[in-house]
Length: 185
View 1 (cartoon, rainbow, N blue to C red):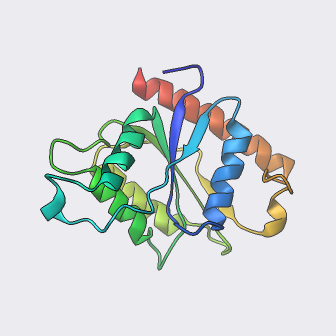
View 2: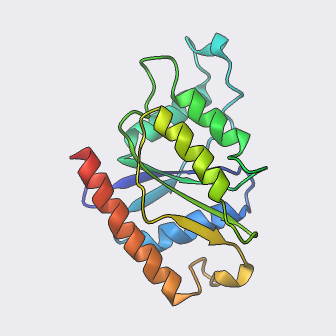
View 3: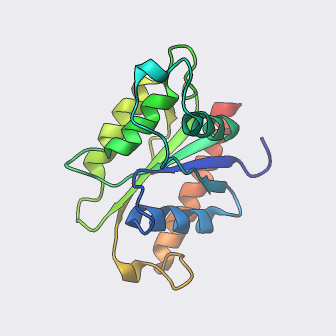
């Protein structure tokens, strides 16, 4: 592991201008001195089909390779109907298969999420945490990031506008880096 751990960022929305993509980009900008966050594109990963496990599509192989190459994973998820989006669950499922060849076990991770609503993505994060626990992902417990999205929460260059939130994310980045070091030993 380098001085700056490489973190694969998996955004639970495929939309190019999603609020969670903006959140992920602002987090990456804020923690750049400490962590190297890189968004992983998985838009071409097809719906999971066990018939294709023995010879997975190229997009699945590329997705799994990106996760394997990272020191840790940051999941940034919206909340759809009080749960995580289907595209996110689908990608997680592909990378956990076939049995014995999944890439998640022991991987350090953290979860964040954004929504315009007042309760953030609490239900989606619980849903995601339950799935990640089942496949032995080492999810950091605290601090957690529940971000209420408003356009004025961001600066023109894509950072966070509120200095208190910048300080919170910097502290979160320090704790996540320590978590990664602890898990990866």
